Length: 213
Ligand code: GLU
Image (cartoon, rainbow, N blue to C red; front, top):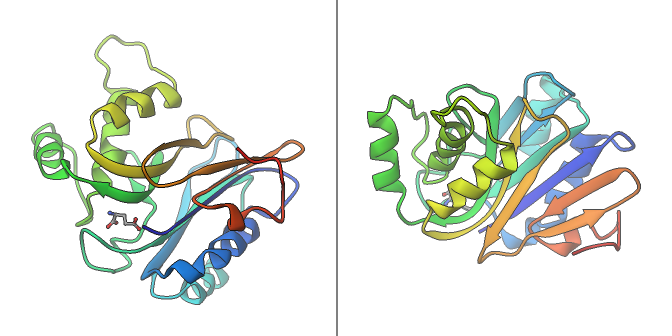
């Protein structure tokens, strides 16, 4: 169970805030890291790397990213090898949704089997990827023609999971929004002036705001 840091706001450099926050959680140990960043209404950009955060920084240096909101993760692998492919954030089939997750989805095998039967394409060995596809299903494939909000889709998704989790979810169709949920592992929300933070632990964002809950 490792690190999550998310930021929404135009005041700060989103990539810097996220990488700096993840560094402040490094003491917890991790085996890989990743980040997803977006600008209003544009496609999500994702970078991931095996090993230390400096490898992720190097990949960003070679192929820079920027945006006004985003989310990052340091992974301690429980399901699937500690490779770049298995590093979070994980994507759905449309590429519009990304998920970072701390914890374990205990019923991921049965969920994955069903989602594959329904036509979803999986690209990682992780338990976490089922969450991205479930959010996709609950957001876009509701059957009644009315699309729920991302919050509603995530709420429905977490009811289908057994296990423990702290989650951060972004969908590029709903700009400037990070939906977080937790059951077990900690998650903290930080409020700034026209800016918002989410993290798996206080030290990641405490230097930005003391308005935490
Ligand atoms: N179970 C997830 C995985 O193996 C999340 C691990 C974590 O908490 O970092 O990818």
